Image (cartoon, rainbow over all chains, first blue to last red; front, side, top):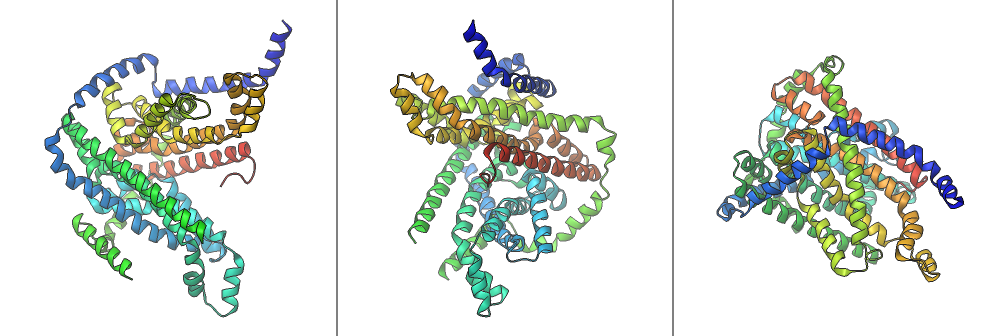
Length: 264
Length: 254
């Protein structure tokens, strides 16, 4: 009996949070229309459906190569242009380089940009430019600014102030300070963040493809729409290989850069 | 210099291959201006007069919340089964590690298309997709977190006769709890964004609303919804940062 009281006392402070959590969960489940009946019925149907995917349509293999390459290129170009723009914005958003007004305005812009999901940017761009690879690349580049811009700006703010001061004291102007002082220092960060972002962009590029940028994501969505599930499975295999490949590559390269950075 | 040349050639080839013309972006920039003209002024009446918009926001929020909760819990369970200091059998560990890496590479797009078929296009389908995505994203993180806990406390109570379960309960769980909570909150933050994107593919919520408004060319509504999304995501991010800072202590959060 004494043991029970002791235990109750010990866990008493968890009761209120648990009740709140339960209530919120229940409310959220009602709003979502999530019920266990639906879940188990749906899971049964889902598993049955997975049977429809097999076997993959190997005949569609050659016609998938072109969209797959397109997806990779969209991600590549998006990352490249995006990282270049991010460096520019990061320089404007660093408190030790830009004046406070410019800095705050840029930081605000970066924060707003980060709040818009890439798919939403793409929808707006497609409304302006029509379907195609171009809105996809632009959406991914803009998406980079939100993340890389902030990360790089933080890195720049963290560099040694003595370095900037010493360059200025011997008569270096702002451009010289940036080109010879700041950029070489943050280069490893730029490369490693960019590689990381490339990994993310490949996934996004697949998703954006289905929204309307073209590529393998579109093929997947289209095959599902046409109820051609064997073809869809082929596209899925392609996507998995691409995503897995870039993840490994990006991880390997980042590790290598980190090791080289540690040596010097 | 050679590197730069190679890169520019590759970029040029890539641009030609995908018909991506960087100059066209600037030449055709007037389309953006036209669109912005079309979009202003944003029709905020869609937020105040149409109750379904408020509902859509609630749907997106609850989607992300449930997915973070369930996905997070499942991810923790899998992490315990995949971490070397909590799971003694290598076969089980390897199986769950493989499962986690498989979940991570299956794109959200494929998962939602399957769930839309399984349970119909609804918020529920979006939520289930987010659960899977959350497990994939955070399962590995939690596994690494478990493997990085400090060993000595566990060894100490093990040496005085604690069982494996007791070691987990009194040494490992207290150590990972703050990081775990912080990561679950972060998962919510990430899931909000994904939930909005998934809405476009039949996941329901505000993303679906946006897609709907765009496809009937109500650009003023689109503008209003986009501002709403910005406010929503920024708000969640600020709250999430605040809570995480509170949990982890000042300065731990980068």
